[in-house]
Length: 242
Image (cartoon, rainbow, N blue to C red; front, side):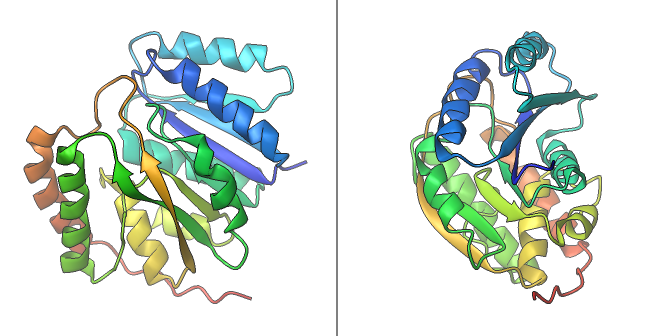
């Protein structure tokens, strides 16, 4: 039987905090009563992440935890790989969180309840506790996305997102494999395809470990790369909902 909810967790060099992340999210998901499965995607970690994941998968006897390990291809493309697995699993919904401790499970129930009548529910990081630099980066992303595509994405790179799998796979596949910040591209494609969006305000916690995917010192260069890639992003087919 396919689960109703497929949770993907991209992991890279997160041995410091992954244990506590999996514990708090397992507890919250169990409390909701939803039928779920969690896929841990190890993006070629070189620390103790792989061993920690293996212990969790072996100890979770109900089979709710599974894992995939692949060569490093970056956070964004790892997320897309997880979304593809969710679509192929037959699950009705896919939810993404990151493995660095910033995604607080306290908001999940509200996100889950908002899915009725919507195709995608985003956590809107109205309060970020990870520093003004990251706030500035998010605002820059919003401006770049608006300028390059015309899409009004309030928080296009947020990991806290719930999406229906109905019609998702073609949009995931429309994002080129060379697109580093793939979650941003997917948010644009969902809006272009006419997906019904909802936002749930969340507080984004400080990182519990590891390093940001894109350090602030590299963000100016990444912003220029993002503009170029967004301009080349193919337009998806408009999805008509029943």
